[in-house]
Amino acid sequence: MYKILLCCVSGVTTNKLVKAVKESAKQKDIKVMCWAVGSKSVGLSWADADCVLLAPQSASELSKFEEMIHGVIPCALINENDFVEMNGEAVLNQALDLIKK
Image (cartoon, rainbow, N blue to C red; front, side, top):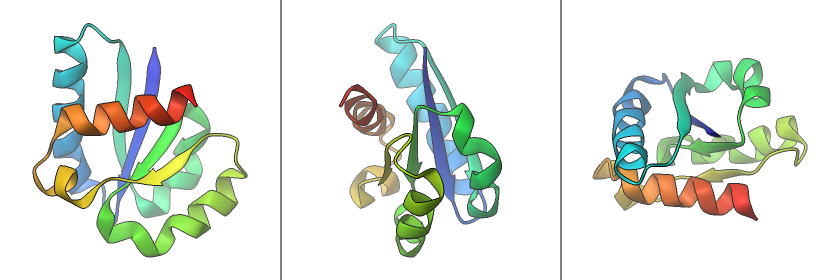
């Protein structure tokens, strides 16, 4: 099972994306646990994940999260178009690519 943590400023917008990622995973018969948190809660949640993906509006916090995670798991920004379109398949693929590196 792949564990994917999505993060935005409050966690509200990424909750919609979580549903899209889970639906895409279900269609591909891939087992995932995907959840969303606000940026202030990443410190409490990242250790349970295989990767952390940040919403584009959190780009300024990427280096802070990378420092917090110390390279233990991958951390990256979600592509802006994929985020705006709530493209669960693309975000799932991005997460899986990061995890499998």
